[in-house]
Length: 273
Image (cartoon, rainbow, N blue to C red; front, side):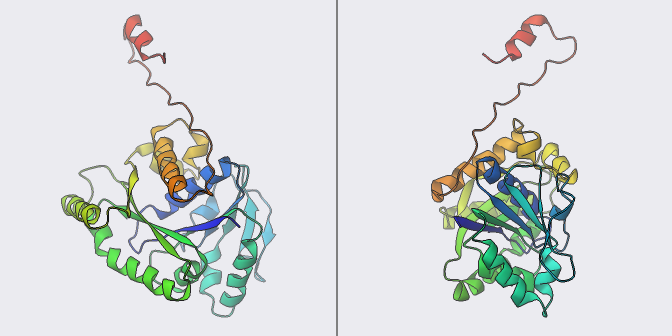
């Protein structure tokens, strides 16, 4: 297997699921086989619109199913959280995931927003972790807990590496609680740990939120959108740090349509040259 990457944060609504989905789809569109593991209790990724009707059952209760998607190369392991939290099945499921590492180029993990057995299991398996940080005060309040979970996991999993913090603006500027304090916290992180603060950021765009609500990967459903470009920028930064990352060529941005009634000259100016 080439690699494994977990998105982890103990702050709710930090953007872990949307980042995991779009990163996994981006890697798959780059020609790599990817297993996206839905280890979140919300099971958002298990409702991905492009899931096949059938799949491979991995537990005796028939709940944890590995299902292909309409994104070539992307498979989703659905409803893994409850199995990883089931004390009677946890060891078996962790071993199953270890064996699956041999079948895919990448394993990408979505994780719960609380410290539980599923999060510990994922961090025992992953080789890299990215911490999405939302632009509000609550996200930074939970950051020490998140980092402690990663540090604890590194005692057992010596291959686990913190790749960095990814800023995720999942709400519009001015709408986040404690936004000013969050900005100060991010600036502090950037000064104290510049190598860990990723340059890429997921913007507060309605298309990012809507595509996820619709069960779609934005990099696949709207590859020329501004949101998809942001995930491409994140992928490019990953590739700079991890040579095994393979990415598709970014789609050309779609120019904005001229306003109704705009003169022909303005319309021509909007055309790509």
